Image 1 (tube, rainbow, N blue to C red):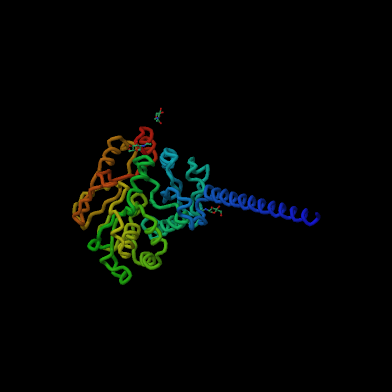
Image 2 (tube, helix red, strand yellow):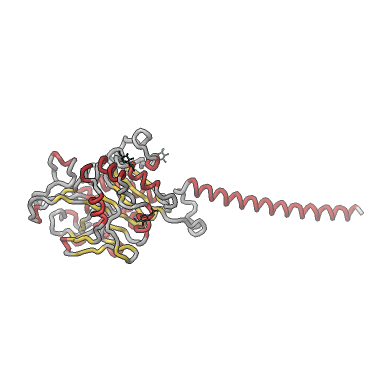
Length: 367
Ligand SMILES: *[C@@H]1O[C@H](CO)[C@@H](O)[C@H](O)[C@H]1NC(C)=O
Ligand SMILES: *[C@@H]1O[C@H](CO)[C@@H](O)[C@H](O)[C@H]1NC(C)=O
Ligand SMILES: *[C@@H]1O[C@H](CO)[C@@H](O)[C@H](O)[C@H]1NC(C)=O
């Protein structure tokens, strides 16, 4: 009798234990999933999910990287742009001078709060410190594995289209958008850059590029080309008004190398990656034609649009551009996206705050 009862008790008890153990494992699994999901929501920058890229597959993000002197005078334009579409994934990073803080007193837009890189450097326009700022922004943005495109923007840039159009346009190709052309003839190449940078790989283009993740990583990891730029790519002494006209009139053949107009282009050429770029910038800049048409003496500077320039005609004329002519290469680039003819530009510069206020009021930006 005793023996049997004991056995029956033992069986029931072991069955009970098994059941409890199963319940314990089910709860543990649930907790794991919940904490993974919470991590994912709260801290998208964390790398924990890297081993499970498909398990938590998410739409890639575009990183908007702003290079500002101090505050962003056009923050209200970008606020309206970012607010426009809740479904689009993006992130924002700002590089401003050390000591300047984006807080509720210096920006009214929540998109720029706590988005400043901590390790910013003093940027002198036209100096290698500008490239350093770009590298710092890329390094910060690369921490988030969801960031797949990296757009450089200045504090005078505006978006021409809405966020979803912008996103689809940029994501429709895996290439970077980098305007890049040979520049061997115009005196900015310094032979002292050899042998690291042979003249055949010397390129020029706009600073306002859009990079894919692979190219962004190459730029952050570069330890050979950047020091050569620091040492040998220098703009010559500038006239006093240079602050208002960062691209000074080039009146001689003296070396006048503006690092940010060459660095990304030249580095990608050196790495043999020009086949992976769309060779145009998506940021429109208008250039003042000087009186002299002599090519050697040409010295253009970017136009700044003021309140009185800010009309629908201006914006429509920029949106209408569907091809770009590259004089030095006698090459005409017809712009396309997803295999169809398309506008060439998604962004434009340079706009003053009153001009941008007027354009936004007329619903001409980000639409
Ligand atoms: C900057 O530093 C603060 C405090 O040390 C930190 O909370 C914040 O996340 C950092 N920001 C970035 C963009 O790294
Ligand atoms: C975004 O802009 C595109 C092109 O201008 C337009 O066709 C589309 O309707 C806009 N989308 C939204 C959500 O406003
Ligand atoms: C544009 O400005 C006018 C006059 O300042 C103002 O009354 C109007 O509400 C503004 N419109 C928009 C869309 O902001």
